Image (tube, rainbow, N blue to C red):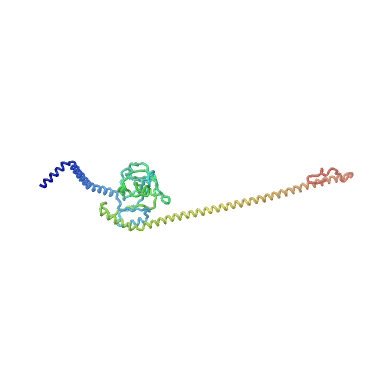
Length: 367
C-alpha cells in the first residue's frame, strides 16, 4: 500500500514537471559524457606528451646561472651521479624593437631539449633566428626581427647581431605553458616569447644554462611519482655540489673585473706619463726657442754696435784721407808758388791777396 502511494506520487510529480525532469536527465547525460571524455582524453594527452618529450629528449634537470657557468662549474656538474647526457648553452633576454615585450633568445641545442620545427627551418648561421609558434601572426619566414639588448655594467653585449632574419617557427619542449613563461630581465619583467639562434651568435666566455638527462629516468613516465622522486634526488645532489659556487663565481668575476680595472689604470698612468714627457719636451723646446731669441737679440745688438763702430771708423778714415789729400794739394800749390818765386826773383814771396775763405778746400786747408 505504501509503495503504491509512493509510485503514484512520483507519477503525479513527473506529470506536473516534465520539463524539469527532462532537464535533469540531460544534465546527468552530459556529465556522464564529460566524465567519459576526460577518462579517455587523459591517457591520450599523456601519450602525446610522452612522444613529444621523448622525441626532443627533454632534459630531466636544468641548471641556470645569472653569473654564467664557468669551466669549474661544468667540471663540478660533470661529477654528478648517473648523468647520461649533459649539454651547455647560452641565452639572453632582449626586447623586441618598438615594443616593451621581452624575448629570450636561446642557443640551438644539439641533442638535449631540442625544438620541433612547425614551419621553415632552424637557424644555420649567425644573423638567422627561429621564433616560437605564437609569433606566427606577427612575423613570417624571411621577415626581419630587430631586438634591443641592454648592455652590462662594462658596456658590452652578448649578442653579436641585433637584426635577424626569421627562418622558421618552432615549438620548445622546455616551455609547457605559453601563458606563464616566467620572469625576464628585459622589457616589462615578464617573458612573452622565445627564439632560437646558433651558438656562434653569443659573444660570451661562459655558458648560462646546463641541460642534463639521467640514466635512471629512462622509461619512466614524466608525470609519475617515481620520475618526480628520481629527479628530486638529482636536484638535491646538484644543490649540494654547487652550494659554494655562487660566492666563488662572484669572487672570480670580481677578480676579473679588478684585473681589467688595474690594466685600465696602468694604461691611464702610462698615458699620463707620456703626456708629462710630451709636456716636458714642449717646455724644453720653448725654452730653447726663447734662448735662441735672446741670443739672436744680443747678436743683433752686438752686430749693430760693431756696424756703428765700423761706420764711425770708416768715416774717420775717410776724413783723414780727405785731410791728407787736402794737405797734399796745399803743399803742391806752395811748391808751385815757391818755384815761381825762385824762378823770377821779382815777385814777392807771398802774393795771395784774395780773401782767405775763397781758397779754403774741403779739408780746411788755407793758403
